[in-house]
Image (cartoon, rainbow, N blue to C red; front, top):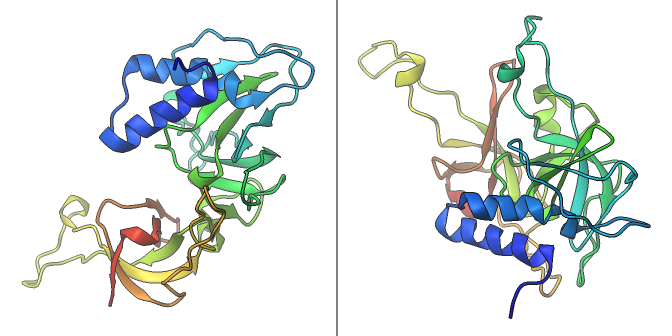
Length: 259
């Protein structure tokens, strides 16, 4: 039958993206147009909002609180970094959109309890199609499934220095990636572009396991902290720290083998 709810439309778009890796402009617009369908606004009926080029849906001025439907969370997006580590002010075009923030509302799942709680600071994937941006009273929020959250950061306003202390969610693992080779076997120094991206490292933290959303069962993690592993080259979300270390958060299924 005809899809009547915003939730179904968004899930259809997410499913298409996972299967094909692509999403049409029209489907992207539908996803944002139906963002209000993901929310229950106390005391107000859902409204369709005009889509802007920034793909942020601005809610009505009187809306000050929303509740996510299903196993979703609402995250208050962290503020943009306006300075580099050296203190140089960045123009707006150079400021990267944050992919972390504080959980301000938590939905409910049918067969299990969500791991996230209000007040948790989370890191989420910048490539998640299911992430829908909304604005309330000039403040930006992200609505997303808990399964699209990468991990829980140790504090609010966390920085890349805190990535080593993240608590992975689901079946994700935190890996400290091995350093890249700086010279060839013949002793030739390599430029950054010539250095092969390492795909090995040590497991520093593991998630609780993947949740089967139909049954609520949690799969047992096979990896353990301290395991030396090799992982799929393009997997995960790599983070470089000011100290020069690289960490990557990948799904356990993207780990190829133990070494």
